[in-house]
Amino acid sequence: MDLKLDDLQAFLNIYQAGTFTKAAKDFGLTQSALSQKIKRIEDTLQTAVFIRHPRSLSLTPSGEKLLAYAKEIALRQDEFLKSFDQYNQELNGVIRIAAFSSVMRSMLIPLLAPFIRKNAGVSLELTSYEMHELEDVLKTNKSDFIITDYEPSLGGIESIKISTEEYVIIKAKKHPKAPQTFLDHGPQDNATSSYHKFIGKKLDYERAYLGDVYAIIDGVAEGLGKAVMSKHLIDSDKRFIIQKEKKRYLRPICLSYYSQAYYSPLQERVMALLSSL
Image: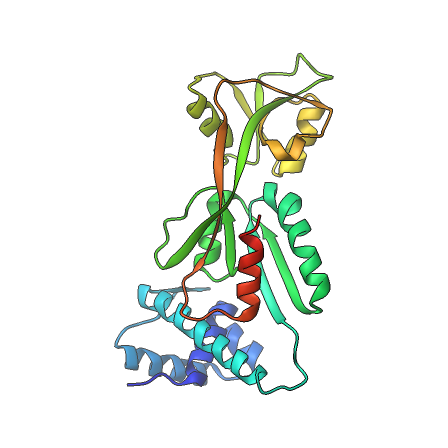
């Protein structure tokens, strides 16, 4: 029983494309050829790897296991071939990181920019998501690493606490009579409710949604309401007053990625950098 490298690459291509039709078009193969490759995989594993929907695909539990394996095999081959290029002495490749907005601009870009400038062969894809979306981003292979303010519960992943973030309530100095409205990203943003639950206060308040952490900061500055905000984002901003509480609300910042037997030199360097936050 064996899995052909070409079939594993076809599996990765189909998953990346989202449908057999798009994969056939993107990679210059017929749908029949791709279907045969997946059939060989499924015959070898004695299980299905894709669930076919009318306009999309999703992975079965076996397909999720195969995804991690196929990515590792492809990575090992890529690194092996590069080792025979005597002129290639630099790190190269793409690193994809997904995170929530309050750490993206303030922490990740300043941390990673010097590394990217020094390694011309490395490209970086940073994407901001709502907190509740990040586990699915990792699970569906849209990113290599995710950063959350909690430890994800996905199976087969490694999670490392890399920093801590303090949350506070902020209000505008120029608008002391701002409404008792708390500004959040959207309906599923639980920052405000989690904060009040932690400090033990039950308040009646309205909510308004501005979609982005920096829009929330500007909204508070303009007197649209209050907000539960990452303290490091407004520490030096003279427009705000921090509401004093007896308890400090701290949340972890966690780096998560799928556990692999092998990590490329680029992945190891990036994980070390992120762990230094």
